[in-house]
Image 1: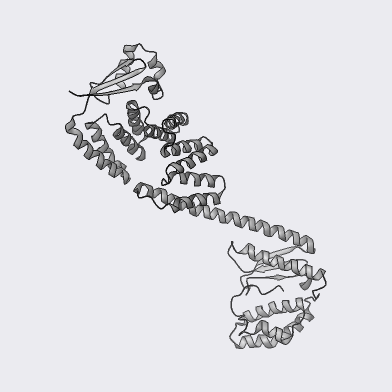
Image 2: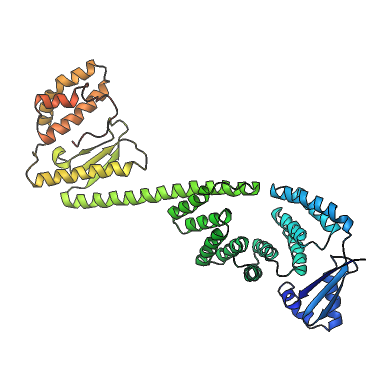
Length: 425
């Protein structure tokens, strides 16, 4: 009968067996018996001998007649696992192992399927058996580390990842798993380095990009997260269907990072508006009030304190999108600054809006207001337009007839439309 033979370094087993110190102290015969019991998963007639720091395992080998059934089951199981159908893959992997218990890759794949299905104890049992046969298999060590990490066994997970990294320092799966552990152990700088190395080793894998994006968001750097995700999307989506949830998560992260970036930008703009508002209040000697008016026919306007004889300047604006409002407010603040500078230089007429001057201004514009009404402009809007024009008249002096006509003549300036602010009042 053909025999299966394997040789394992005892020092490698020490990292896998928590009770190794007690085992190592046993007499040789008892140690061999204890190890034989650990390898019973291979065959009831397995035997282990210890000599010169090595464990030699031998047992009856699988029959060559089983080769084809084993390939059939592993091929079908692998196809199911690639589609994410882990529960259906598990019995096929298990049947392949029954036919060939010595297959390390199949045992590791079975452990992976159990882990993905959430059956962590079963996963640990099978991956440890795979490592008893091949203690230096990097992918088995990564799977062990990932499973221990999910159970919160950080110290033991660290040992598994460290060993995997010693065996395969450039392997992208090793680097990605080690980076996740580094995050869990509050070592973000190390995690970033390992994820970048993983991308360099396998640019098509989405895992390290997601890790870097999540780290950037955690560090309140949404633009860095967007840049990382852009790198992923530029590569195109992987064909492996198991990657689909990862790309869905990448899209979710992209939207979250975009929203955070917009919020951060808006916060900076709001702070800039408030700083300029405080600066101009001090400069002009009047506080600056800001209020919203849904009935305002233009986006925003300024009511100057020195024109309206009020304690404060007032900026009135329509309801506007949050991303647009700071820009509009800043434009109105700059109108206050320009008018203040003009007054200081003696280039602005110091008219005020008392009842008499308002009546004069309204009379000057009455004919044009009537023309607007005849052309179908609603009365409320006509009044609002006239009020805006009166404010302008009182600020700059009564315009000549052709100037007023240019302001209100519909053919040249469609005042019934929705326009941006034409000037302060």
